[in-house]
Image (cartoon, rainbow, N blue to C red; front, side, top):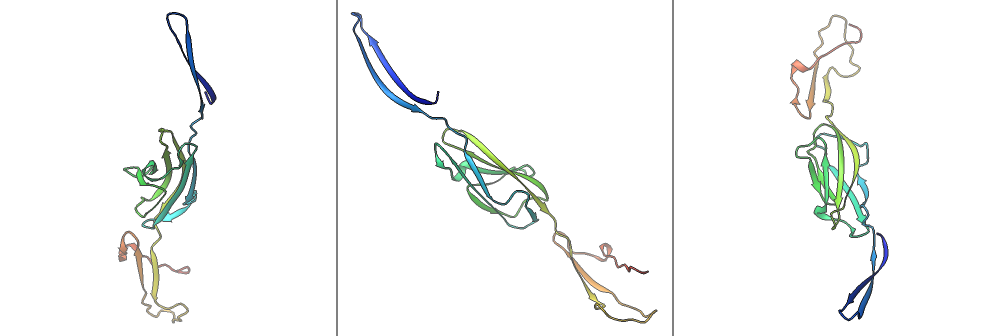
Length: 171
């Protein structure tokens, strides 16, 4: 049990003489590590291929500050699930989706604890632009108008004519 213990060692010989010795020891509870996930914040949103810095601090009443390979970071989506170790690292390879990130520490006695955050990885929208006609250009009814533009996507690169559409709010 937790607390200060007086330990007595006693020996008796055949004649009934007794000898003893005492020591005092203290037993403390090995507490689960205390966590602080500093980055990213819970609920943060990132885009695919964006670098994300993971940073955390952990301490407990036996080891003090826990560092290095005793700290692991995992994602419920990735396979393998471990995405990093240590107090700080950067990563840009998380898959699209909502990730439950688990930050786990283990002290020298094997006592583990964890903290959790949720982050979302999204695919960005295509980057598009209209090259011509220019905004505000004036045309006569029936005049031929040449439309041109571009569309680039983070995953697909330049988008082809099959995935592009021109519309008017009147016709």
